Amino acid sequence: RLVGEACQKHGFFLVVNHGVDKTLIAHAHNYMDTFFELPLSEKQKAQRKIGESCGYASSFTGRFSSKLPWKETLSFRYTAEKNSSKHIEEYFHNRMGEPFDEFGRVYQDYCEAMSTLSLGIMELLGLSLGVSREHFREFFNENDSIMRLNYYPPCQKPDLTLGTGPHCDPTSLTILHQDQVGGLQVFVDNEWRSISPNFDAFVVNIGDTFM
Image 1 (cartoon, rainbow, N blue to C red):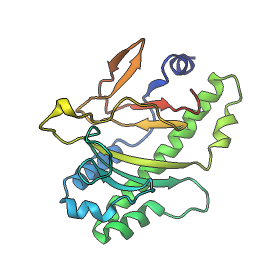
Image 2: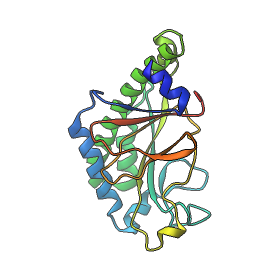
Image 3: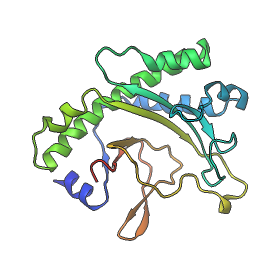
C-alpha cells in the first residue's frame, strides 16, 4: 500500500532491509572514487563514443552540448540473461586493462545484487497495481540495464552550472545509492524537496514506463 501511494504521488520511495551486503556497497563507492580520481588520460581509455550509451563522459571532454551538467559519468551495460557471461568484468578488462579486473568483479557483483533487488521491487509494484506478484517480475526477469557512476566535482562557478538538471527517467526503474554529500531532490507538490543521504537505504524511482 505504501509503495503504491508513493508511486501515485511522486514515484519515489526508500528501500531499507534490502539484503544487499554493506561491504559490497562500500566497495562500489570506493572504486568509483578511485576511478574518478584517475588522470583524465586514464579515464579516457573508457571514453564513450558518439551514439553509444556506455563509457566515460564528462562536461570537460565534449560529451555535453553545454556546460550546465557539471559532472563525470561512467556507464556500462548489465544483462540478466541466463546465458550471459561476466560481461562487466570483461568490459573493465578490455577497456581499462588488467589492473582494473577487481573493479570489474565488484561491479559485476553489485549489478547482480541490483538485479535481484529490482525483481523484488517489481513484485511490490505488481501487488500495488492489483496484478499478481509475478506479473512484472516475470516480464523483467532477464532484464537489460545500465549501471551508471556519477561524480560531481567541485565547480568554481556553481551559479552557472547544474550537476544534473530537472528530468524524468525514461526507464522502468532506477535504483540509486547516495554518498554522504547529498544534493538529490524530488519535485513534490510544486516544490523541490531534498532526500537526505542514508547509507542503509536505496532510493527507488519508477520511470516513465510506470508513471
